[in-house]
Image (cartoon, rainbow over the protein chains, first blue to last red):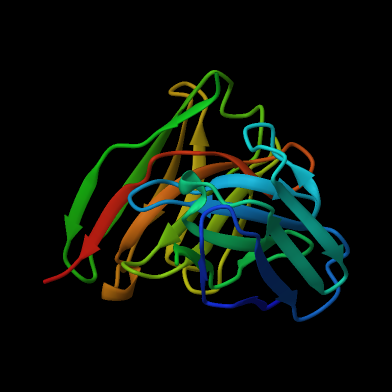
Length: 107
Length: 119
């Protein structure tokens, strides 16, 4: 099983600042990585797929990078609607696995 | 518009069985692979199962293997998750989710069904 590790667990950021979230895979997953945003009481929403391709409903301030085992999600200028929990997920191999999540909270 | 519709809430005793449903709208249940992801209270996301291809090949997480069965019914355009031998640690919100056509990231999600396993 591929273990996905996210850091930090919590990120405190002021509106307008940049947020950088990290995700590490326990083995090479090439670019088979997705990022999801989840707000309280809601289903997750796909933000990024194939490590760096942004989903159509998300603005350009969201960007993803990385390949192999190290990945990053960057939100360039946080808006109030961006405060949420973000999860990474690998889809290189079965079983599909998620990271533990990073909560982005208002500083 | 593609939608996955899930009914609301279930309470079941340990050792019991329950079948969850996910009604598909805007496409055929066999147009895409489909699956389930769960989230225990206050915890992260855990992939549970995916059914793939026209032959309904299933894939399961080890935590549910042998207890849960995923299936599809084209006449009802619905996916199901049959859950047997339920345990208290199966308590979670269960989301149905549609993977992308080519790769298994989830691009459409249902709103989730709450399952509480408790005596």
